[in-house]
Structure formats: structure tokens, C-alpha cells
Image 1: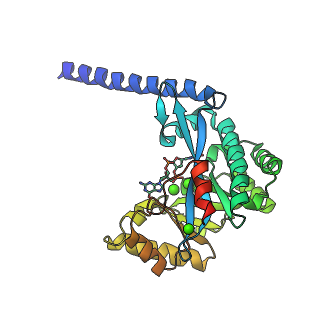
Image 2: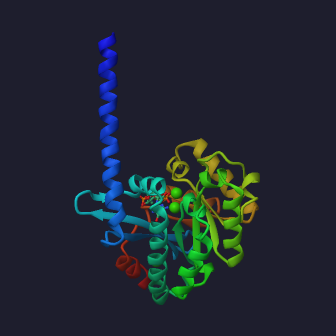
Length: 276
Ligand code: C2E
Ligand code: CA
Ligand code: CA
Ligand code: CA
């Protein structure tokens, strides 16, 4: 039994060190990723469910490294947050998204906004508000052209400082959406303390439509409550027409997902806008 314990320990240790090695490799390569031009953005369209027009895009970061290949954001964003690299990375993402949004607006002047994901760690940077304002102005955009996506988890862990940054940005004219709504177990009452414009219903609920009655009822309740509190609602991860039909029937405003379009390169996003 003693031996087994030892082997188990070694096995565990080996797994752990492998993981640490991979993390270190990602961390080291990520440091140079911006400089080496390895980071770029894809854009996933958001559709008005009634008119079927593209009204906005969400910027999603991509990383292509020579040795590591394509590293998904789910793998490197956490590492960027833990190491502080997210600060520079976040500013870079904001800048590229603003530049590309100018291009998009040239093709379709009626586009509403560009949605940019922002990590809670970025909000803790005391220069965050000034930095994003500078980036937006430098690119000739208005704060109202930008929708900042924060996750429901971030909202729940807020400190007074984070809330202040959000309120300052809101007062400057930035829009806010709550990402992954429904997964963080917060109450709507709590959420009303934050300057939010949009609720994004998490894909986990959309997945079950129309077969799973619980998910159907939850989606219905989130949409109804959001609307009564004057939030716009975006449904994420729509993959089938039946989901779209149901969301339309409960008066959800906006839809996003593979059923409409996968995240696109800037070139392809501009093509989509040409006949929007
Ligand atoms: P998210 O913000 O919830 O983004 C939605 C994710 O779902 C994206 O994955 C998108 O490609 C994917 N998706 C969209 N429609 C569908 C669908 O119909 N079916 C399925 N199966 N998936 C769909 P992605 O691009 O891999 O991003 C994963 C997460 O990484 C994002 O989740 C976000 O939390 C984070 N992330 C991505 N880009 C950024 C960024 O620029 N900054 C920060 N801080 N986080 C980012
Ligand atoms: Ca998002
Ligand atoms: Ca989401
Ligand atoms: Ca169209």
C-alpha cells in the first residue's frame, strides 16, 4: 500500500510538472507574441433576429505561434491574467479592434458597435480608464462605438475600485454587456447596481432549446426579466434554426452563433457587410 502511494505521488508530480512546463512555454512565447505579430482578431457577427441584419461584431483574439501552433484563448487568457501580460495584450486587442471597426463602418455606416472582451484583471489596472479612452480617441471613434464585455463572474467578484472604473467608463459613454449570463449565480437585483446595457444569455441555456424544457423556461425567464429591466438581450451560441425560431418567438433582440456565422477574419467580415 505504501508503494502504491509513492507511485501515485510520482505520477501526480509528473503530470503537474508537464503542465507547468506547458504553462511556462506558453508564458514565454506569449511575451513576444505581440512584437512578433502572432496575435490577431476574428470577428463574429451579431444579428438582429427580426431583420436578419448584422448590427455588430464581437472581437475574439487568436494566437498563431510557430512552435505551439494555434493556441485557443481559453488556454492563454488565464496565463496572461496570472502573469500580468493581459494588460499589454488587452490594450493591443482594443487598438486593433478599434482600427478594424473604422474599416467596418466605412462599408456599413449603420453598424452599432464593436464588442470587446475585457478581463477583470484589466479593470484593476489604475490606468485602464484613461488608456482605453486614449485608444478610442486616437482611432477617431466615440466611446459609444465600443461595447465592453465583462463576465458575470467578474461582476460577482467586484471590488469598489472595479465598480468605479465601470461607472467612469459608462459616464464617458462606453456600453457594457454581461457575458456568460446565467452561469455565475448572481441575482438580477445585484446586477442592477452595475451600469449594464446588454445581457448575453450563455450558450449552455441556448444549447437545450427546444428539447430541454428547463433550458427553454430559463431562457424565457432571462429574456423577459432583462427586457423588463430595459436591458437588450443577446443569445450566444445559436447553432440551429429551431433555436432561432424560439428566440424570435420570445422577442430576444440579437443572436450570435455558428448558425449565422463563425468568427471571421477582418477581410471576410468586410465582405459580409458589403451585402448587409
Ligand atoms: P466568449 O466571450 O463567451 O466567446 C464566445 C466563444 O464561443 C468564442 O470562442 C466563439 O468562437 C465561440 N462560439 C460562438 N458561437 C458559437 C457556436 O454557435 N457554437 C460553439 N460551440 N461555439 C461558439 P473563443 O473565440 O475560443 O473564445 C473563448 C473565450 O476566450 C471567450 O468566450 C472569452 O471569454 C475569451 N476571449 C476571447 N477573446 C478574448 C479577448 O480578446 N480578450 C479576453 N479577455 N478574453 C477573450
Ligand atoms: Ca464574449
Ligand atoms: Ca460568452
Ligand atoms: Ca444579410
